[in-house]
Length: 116
Length: 222
Image (cartoon, rainbow over the protein chains, first blue to last red):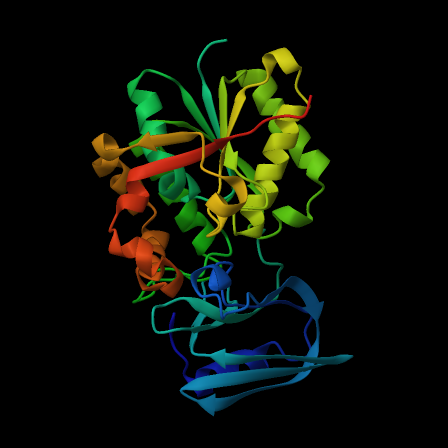
């Protein structure tokens, strides 16, 4: 993964326009958050291989980015994205990491389902 | 009953952090050890700095690390194929039967797992509960002894002192080697451990926490 290049990500988002795609969306502060700090709450959400079609996609922000997908029946968005990669299967992987390289949020788009 | 230890934990690295000294001790005494590892730790957060993993490559990386750690520990490895962070949503009875199929075959003398309700991570609690349910479903005469690992801060207060404490000083180098085999996790976990305000007191005592591995002996209701 490398730091987000806005234009490249926008291009990648656009190539999936109006296609049936599979989305992985995740956010977490880790299962140990409240174990290591009693003032913290464990929070997280995860959906893998949700099929959607979107008619509009946008990446917004500087340093840390927001991505929103306007889908047939609603919206998908993620905030706090910092890094991206287009992998060898042409999947767009985006993630937000903290300073220690821990994943905080991920949004991934693929034309084929992601593996288990 | 032949001595054979079955370790049942959900994540690659749980064995290294939690029980590797004990595992090495059993192995040095010539006791076979089998690790039933629940998941591939697909949902791990540490991607390295600089990155060496992303969400999609992490499972294969952690699988390799698990295999490497099991080589260090000289244990037989079985991967159960569950998805990280979903174990508590599986049917407990089904997971228990899955585990029991291994136990019926191996006929172990000991099972090492997490103490349900005192294991912090939802997967830990769920795997521990399923392991205990699996043993409970065995005939009383053939049941292995269950050693349950509790890691909550208030475990001594709630559960009393554990019956079993294994000092692993003699095997500490190899324990660290097993932890380090889980490269993607070791650094992040140790950092988090060092910085935790909840663990500051423990940290002051340095590695003492890692030098003694503690387990509660599980008692089954008659």
